[in-house]
Amino acid sequence: MMEKETLGEERDAAYSDLGYYIINKLHHVDESVGSKTRRAFLYLAAFPFMDAMAWTHAGILLKHKYSFLVGCASISDVIAQVVFVAILLHSHLECREPLLIPILSLYMGALVRCTTLCLGYYRNIHDIIPDRSGPEMGGEATIRKMLSFWWPLALILATQRISRPIVNLFVSRDLGGSSAATEAVAILTATYPVGHMPYGWLTEIRAVYPAFDKNNPSNKMVNTSSTVTATHIKKFTFVCMALSLTLCFVMFWTPDVSEKILVDIIGVDFAFAELCVVPLRIFSFFPVPVTVRAHLTGWLMTLKKTFVLAPSSVLRIIVLITSLIVLPYLGVHGATLGVGSLLAGFVGESTMVAIAACYVYRKQKKKRNENETATEGEDSAMTDMPQTEEMTDIVEMREENE
Image (cartoon, helix red, strand yellow):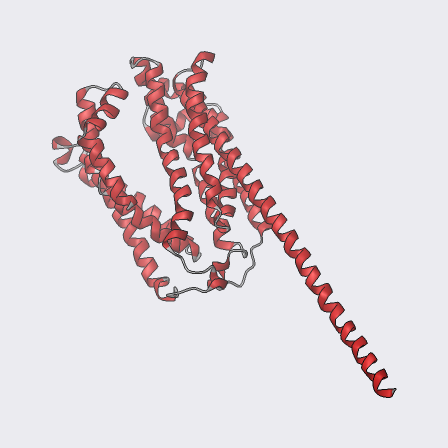
């Protein structure tokens, strides 16, 4: 259902009046750019289905500790895209429809990734998954259970995906659609992939808890000789965060390093690269909220308490838009405004996730204490029962003697 809705949204964005308003009017682009953008949306209409299929099988593979296979599929995706870009650049498409080159390459990469994951699933996992699972394995996965688990995560992902377009929109409109606005959006476009590089992988920490924590009943399906405790997971998370922070500060705070990355990898000139330094340095602080969010989200996913995560996505959008409105009055504009607002949104989201985790932890602790008290009461009652029966036997023996 999600895939069909997304396909419909992309078709609407391509040809409807709403799509024209969002792309052409709100972003202040000319008719040529707007037409090409809407046509690109149309070409990409089938991509969400392939992506959803790939992520569905990737999740099952990660659950059964096949993370290496998932990683190989992702690398194959990138390699396939690079190869097909190189091939298509030498075809007639470069002159007739250059827009199709990245789109077709994206489709081919997704096809390779989806095929790899599906083959890995059917070869390694499909035959060992039971048709039914009892209470000791977490119970039956009903549609209601799956929807209640899925919708907060889908809401979070939707707000994360919409954050960057919102930032681009506000940054462009803040500068009045001038040449400075175009330059600011271009700086954001260049800094997003570079800034995301040292910390983006931290998001996958959320898969560690569900895969290894022994409190998850469904982990009983997976036979493993090694024991991974919550302490191990916390130490692993901390090491990942420390490594990411180190990479960020080395890449973005060491003189001339970030400029060299932008010039040599992204392909911009040195003057433009200098304008990207400050936004990239703001990206250095992203690893902390991203790690907190990923670690606690994984723990809550293990407990199937994802409903408490829903408010974090709402708070993220509120903080993001508030920052985009308030910071210009403090003299912050351009790409710095965009990245700074993104950081504020991340901090607000991770703070709400931490509050939700504390709430769940306190409820669990209270429930555990009540269970322990009830257990102690039952043990005490069981201990007293033999004494009562023994006294009854003594009284009966006395009566017989008399």
